[in-house]
Length: 72
Image (cartoon, rainbow, N blue to C red):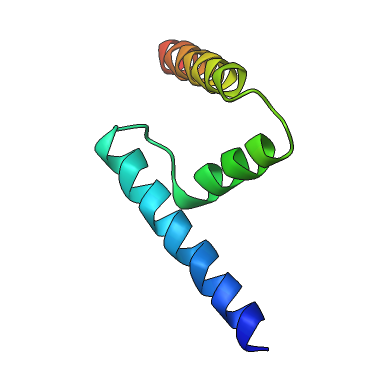
């Protein structure tokens, strides 16, 4: 049981460090999104491709918001 607890603490510490790095780099990722990205990378997703997808999704979201504001 102690090993499981130790592993959980290590995972939490790692995610805390990754979140701090994310904040320092101004990625705009929240903890849940960062966690999903980490899991995708662990499953073999190319990090550069994932980054490109996130950027494109943000652009599309901004364009939709701008279009919505124009019609409101």
